Length: 88
Image: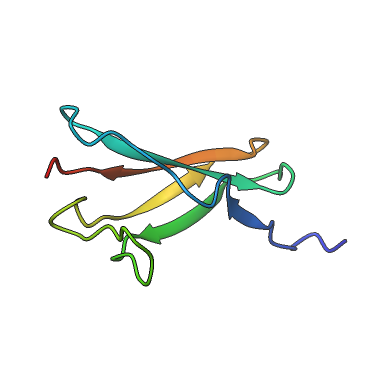
């Protein structure tokens, strides 16, 4: 094992469902690391319109386009990416 080896990052679930008729609703996407690391891990993320599937979520109709940085603290293995939802 290399000291500078990057941890594997993945979504905790391949899909998610949310109620959009709730004030200030957000999709909370859990992101996990394969094992704890000794320093903080940062992940840049951004939304994009769904493709190919039905139903596909679209920015401006279903959610607010988002780009942000998720930081998972040293010793932790889980973080959350937050996506603001729109009630359509």
